[in-house]
Image (cartoon, rainbow, N blue to C red; front, side):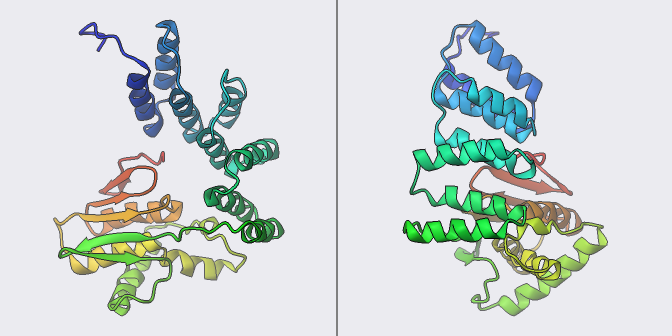
Length: 280
């Protein structure tokens, strides 16, 4: 646009900053943010959200927190939620406390906020707090949409939920899952059991990971199709981190292209890598 002397606006920068966020381009994103300020373009809430997303996805939690608390406009729920997600692997209880407080003030009936905070407590084995959050959800009549992954085979849509045993070909699917687990084990991958948010042993967690909805759908795709057919899966929630890593291994081990659309973005797995470059 600069080459053709076309003046960008704040919507233009939403696209640019979002692209930087999803590709981990922190320096470029900060440079474009400065350019926007220098051009006198007033930043919208979406522009601020993109910058927070960029910093959070890149692990720059302190910078993201400083950016949010210095915003000239009141941050919305999306920004506070990003900050809360980014703080899940840190010990920043101050950020967790502030972000969760703001979220419940802005969206007291949004189940995602309850689940997000409950999951964060579970990651840190704070099971009393997990139970408290779930009780709070029940007391406030907050219902949660179950995670679901879908795949279309021969013009028919197949839907899976975690540990779904209802599919008519579940026995064959579980054979594929065992084969996947064996290949994943041989690859040296260690299951990220923190993704299982229940107070159970490590072995039970590893078993639960193997039957997450996206893994069931991918396994069914392997069962029913052959290369070069692309396995396409849609999930209504965010991709499980362990399933994301396993999907990379599957794409390399089986020589298959896999595309998963989760709540955040598209993931294209080819040859052991993902198009998101592990930023999502």
